[in-house]
Length: 170
Ligand code: ADP
Image (cartoon, rainbow, N blue to C red; front, top):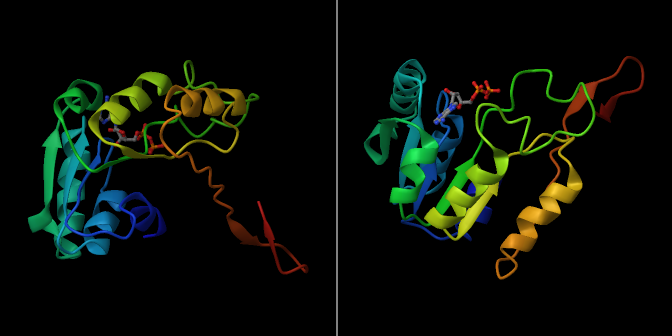
């Protein structure tokens, strides 16, 4: 909800694209947050799209999400929208096992730079969900390529129960 509001600056009636929608979490959140807006949700896996459609029905927002089975990188250049929410594959659960996450190498099978450029061509506002160990210099490069746009870096901190000492950030 926070990301949705930041992306559309609290505005309503926006078209937001989720090119790696998976089971629909971000797309549904966006549709719930902006009751007059629309979402274009894309995933290359038809089973994921079927699950996302089912989940959207549970939340009552299926009428405002258009689901498309397809490759995000092929479709993004043909889209113009108000915002894009990128939550691309991170290459599996071992993404933080071996040093900094490299945007050009580790976001297999896509390239993290190409994904970002395709999203920036489709919309002015782009949210990019990245691993916490992403190479900081590469994030700076992304921002520098689009210096006329404001760049906001947010860190998501997850709290877990720690034995005896309450909750601590991980
Ligand atoms: P995670 O499970 O860690 O979120 P996945 O590898 O499952 O990461 O990828 C996230 C989603 O992105 C999946 O639903 C997958 O089907 C989808 N996806 C992967 N490649 C593409 C692509 N080229 N275009 C669109 N969706 C894709």
